[in-house]
Length: 163
Image (cartoon, rainbow, N blue to C red; front, top):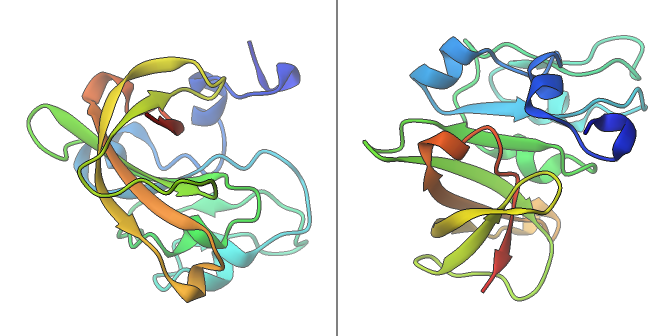
């Protein structure tokens, strides 16, 4: 399956300029930009306080992430109109990874809730625990939810379903 069929494979994501690289993902919390459409858009570049995201000119270029500059601050997640940015922390603890995702549905889960982690196709992968929920007026009604999942799913989980 692939982008041409409506969703990205992990292999396709790793070819995107928004992929920070396996080495960076192993070492720290970092943004992953799964933007693959040449559309006029650059809010992620504007909001990044570290200058880690570049779109440049023309504004239709795909965003590029410099993983060495990104500190995983989460600001880019809610600003992306395509809901295509995630922050991953592969080594959240010895057994789990943390994935921060944009969420625009109701009900909004609470910290401590159990949810069903889904892949890019919406297929169930594993149970997950909500470890953080960020709501802010500056997020323009997009909630940033961080879930903890098994490490083997860190590059696959991109959504969740409230139980």
